[in-house]
Figure 1: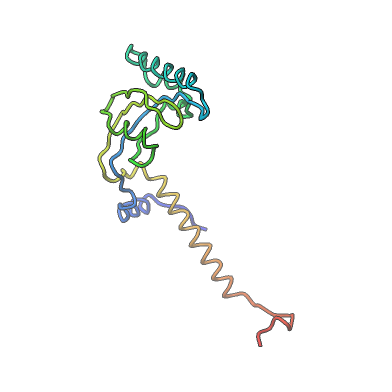
Figure 2 (figure 1 turned 180 degrees about the horizontal axis):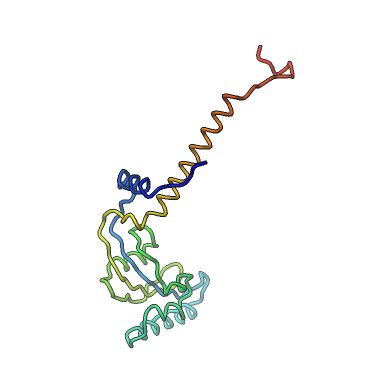
Length: 177
């Protein structure tokens, strides 16, 4: 099975299918999350809000957002300094998204409450609607083209096997009448 994909095939596919790689307006954001359990008491909610407020204060005193996210966030994104990458509207929960898309670049939000807890959001970039650059979708295109080639080779093999198969019915009750 030939599932190798050449650079020329990748580029040709990208150029012939740019509609697949269009995106809406995007923002790049980081966040710090202080979780609040669903059944939290009012006192626990207040403690979480106080904690996120104290972190926000530390940011304005000169602490780095990435550093605080790594040491204080309850979200798995802490490993990446709270980085959520670039995303369009409709990706995040509404309360988070509404605030995130209203922020200016390098602006830190007030504490934002969602079903997960309290967040601080930092927007680090904005990209207008457009087409993803080839390099950013190259791996996805390669994976898709390999899958297409593998599927085509499998289907061709199956057709050849069906054409060359000799079927002999030995049980008389199975023969068509």
